[in-house]
Length: 443
Image (cartoon, rainbow, N blue to C red):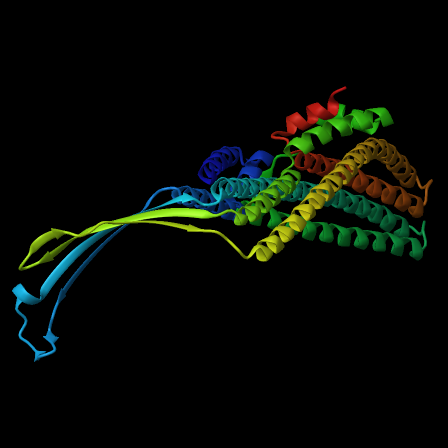
């Protein structure tokens, strides 16, 4: 599984480098292939498979083969010179034993081992989606930081332009020194904001580089938000009835496929099997064994040793110990059932919160776009008035500040919307983004 992911990742990355860009899918594949936690789960799954084989082998007969040789060096008369024909002997022993009845424990133990391996698989699946979420967050974080940096750079350009106009006015005596100092302060503040945005971009890039294992991150493919327009419109205008329908559809998917909830159910089953195993201690056990061999001495030569067959059985009598163990396992089962119910409740809350967040972010994207459009027009209007000396620097500063705020709000809303979709994908364990989008857009 890991080799396949690595090959896929390398193919996608080679294609991405050919175009000098890194796509989200390529970043995801690299993150999965570079994940040490997923590699550890792969080893654990192999170990669980070996445990199941070991449990199966307990049904087979146990074979043993032994050999021995001896020579007498002294006897009651003292040390003697060894004479092989009198003092040498050798033998070969072969034994076989078979457990006939173990109190009915084997089927229960086999079921427990199978559940244990399935639990590990669900844990690996949960980690798979956790890695995807981490890569998505880092990828969107770089794009968001880059957009914020571009916005900060544009704000600095506007501040530089305002400062140049203020210098001309100040030199011509059209404004006082206070207004000129304000323009200087505005320019320095915008430069500080751009430097902070540059640092945030570098940090976001470092996180993505560590996740993907790439030494240098190429340019990232931007997000085509136009492709999300229909989904933004639908989620941004959800009625209570539509919200409830979508939530129920999401819950059905999550209840069937969410690895954390499935794991909680498996742990409950495992606790039930452990309780059944503890009750098997009341039953007797039975085993049989047989042994024979060959002996060799110089005088007698090779002889067949006698055969031995034995039948062993045991009946437990310390019922108070078994009763106490059964009681402990019963409490563990009840606790596992409660854990499953808590996991279901937590999943319901997380689903509702993620869907509400997606709807809120969709609405924020739509309103932020309108606000940004109006703010841009206002800046253009105030800037023209300022050129004509019909507006103050303070009015221009207020307009540009509003523009920057609306730009940042739109950026946060857009990438917040994408992160909320990623959370819904993980909670519902959707195989592809398209399958989630189809559910959200369905009637």
